[in-house]
Amino acid sequence: NRIGTGASIEGTSTEEVQTIISSQEEEITRLHQRVALMKKTHKAEQSKYERLLKSSQDEIERAQAEMEEFYQQLFAKERVARVQFLHMKKLKHALHELALTQQTNQRFQPFLANREMRIANRSNGSQHNQAGPVLNPGRWIHEALHHLGFVMPLSSEETESTESPTNNTQDDQTNIPSNSTKHQDTMTLSRHVEVDATRFRKELLFVCCKSDDPTIDRVRQLHDVLLSPTDKMLSPEIVQGQVIISSPKGFSHQGLAMKVEGSARLQLSTKSAGLFDSFYNNVAPLELVYFHLPVAPAGKVPPGISKFPFEFELQGNDGQELLETYHGVYVSVKYEIVCDCVRGIMKNKLHKTLEFVVEVPLKEPLPDSPEEFHVTPESLENVRPQSLSGMPYFHITGKVHRTNCPVNLPFTGEVQFGYFVEIVIEEAKSPIKSVELQLIRVESVAHGDGVARDATEIQNVQIGWGDVCRQMAIPIYMIFPRLFTCPTMLTPAFKVEFETNVVVLFENGNMITENFPITLYR
Image (cartoon, rainbow, N blue to C red; front, side, top):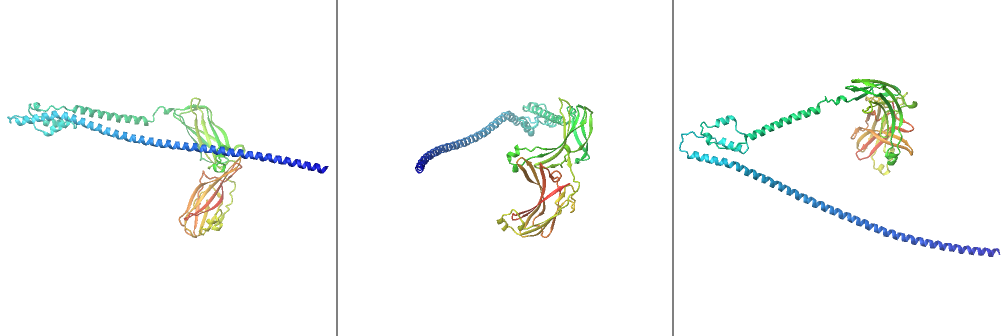
């Protein structure tokens, strides 16, 4: 009984399994058919979109061709119109010349007729002893040209000398209309216009350049904010100075206040944090100093220059240590004095801002920590093997006298002052093009996703040019810029570190760089 029951159970399970398998096969077949139908539909839609895209491109090309043809026709019409305009201009000029010629002929005809009549009368006269008109061809030519408006009339001396000594001259003179009155009026008018223009220019220059405008007297100016003795402060230190106000007539004010603020502004770079994070994940600035200081109570500023002294102690908020002034790419430490003078509701507020430099020296100097280096092709890192095989042999030795460098020492050319590097090129088979020394700043800013670290170049000093001599030391004195370098700062929010690179450039294009991390202190 147990065996029969087991056989029946086994037979039933096999049929069920076969039924399930067949149903799954049918389902798979239907899925394959559906996938094939979807592929066919997708292919049809893709071909349809391709046809639409092609037709759109064809329409765009046709439109571009039509636009080009339209512009060509437009340019052709413009050229034709320009040629026609030039022809019309020439025709107008020719017509004007023709009109002037006809007018000249009409003016000159009476003179020629009278001249011929006078010559005929003189040639046919029988009485030679009578006094006739004095022949002066130059005067006739002068009068003819003056009649046409080309020359000025003769002077009084010439007129008197050419007058006839007898009374019959008046009868024989040619009646030529004169343009002398009109010409004189024209000359007088032009002279008056020229004089008026000169006077106008002088008056305009006087109005533009004069400084006694009454509106200037009403201007009040916050002249300057001066610190004594210099703008360099040591922390902690008593800062003294004075506010200078210049006012021609004086004014009333509601008080003279001062605000001292210092902060470290941080920014993320697009290379380290990405473009999106650098814009939207702003790092809040660190507030180092912030307090208000009253300078003068409400009152009146007398006319002239007024000076208001002030004094405050430079200390950090909540007793925290101050950081040195630094202007970097992604880190900036800045201290400012903001002075405001409120004059009333309807008047502008006087405002002045002054930046001052803060220096924080160490109590004890750091050791020099000298370092020597040897550079050969075998000691190079980050070099491809195939590039190493084609690189010429070289041997460069050097010595860094200080890796802990004081940033505020004078660099007078002596070895013990400043940052001194001595380089000796022992051997180099390839010609050298240049030897350079780079000062690099490394700025690290902490943000929500990690630390953004960026290195930027401050200055590059060329210490060797051309194929330098072998077995000869090359000393360098490097000067640290005041605003772009500072003592090495290591804070939880950011870090400012410095490095130097000794770069050797060969003429074949190879470049060797030796890096030295340095620590700056004051």
